[in-house]
Image (cartoon, rainbow, N blue to C red):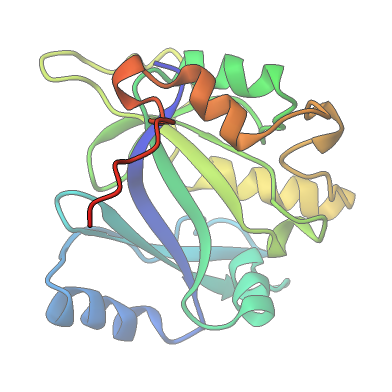
Length: 220
């Protein structure tokens, strides 16, 4: 399959000093379970880092990230300063086959940030790819999508691609931030000029779900 199937997790950037408070909210009020807590994903970085907590709701997850400022303002602090406390940094969408989805997305002009990673994110093993930001702005302040694939029951995840511990993706945004890269997720110039959601849906819908264009009987 080359489409997304569900929301896998939502990542919120929180203001400094707020990750414990929002974790309490998601756990004690909403009923989630803390499955991963990393209080410094880049302890050896003299410039900046972030905290990362994962909260599981079984059918989806919540990720909380909080900036750690050192010599520089953390990209997560920059995001929450721009968009507000507990703002959605990214939403991860599950796919049946990540490679097929990515090939289809790239053919339609989607721009990804780096190569595929393998991780255990507190909700289990996964393959993941991050998109560039939706809006043209500083890379640290962009919201963006993530696309993932989790192993099917009875199968194992390939580890032939880089492992993601939070460090790898953080560095990718730092590189874009430092270089002034404001390129965005999608090049809409590749969108067909005659595209229409109605014609697309009607053409691809099974016969049983095609719109019934017969006039309904007039009951009096």
